Image (cartoon, rainbow, N blue to C red; front, top):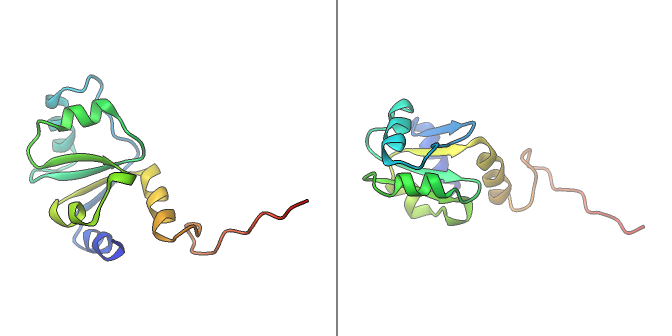
Length: 114
C-alpha cells in the first residue's frame, strides 16, 4: 500500500484537504466539490470516520467512492485516478502503515507500571 500511495504522490494524483463536507448531502454539492478540487475523472475519498452526507452525495457520482480508513484497500487506490484524503486521515494512515510507530518513524515508548 505504501508504494501505491507513493505513486499517487509522484503522479500528483493525491490531494490532501483540511476537511471534506457537503451541507445537505446532495449529489450536486459533491459534483461542485470535486470540480473545485479539479477532479474530473473520478476519485477515492478517504475519510477519518463515516460521514453519511458525504457517502450519500458521492453514491450517484460515477467513478467516485467515499470510504473510511478501515475500508481503504490497495485495489481501490490503484483503480481510482485521484485520491482525496482529509488531513486527519493522513496522520491515521501514516500510523497504520508504520505499524504503531509515530509519524516520524520512531517507536512509541512503552508505558511503565508504577
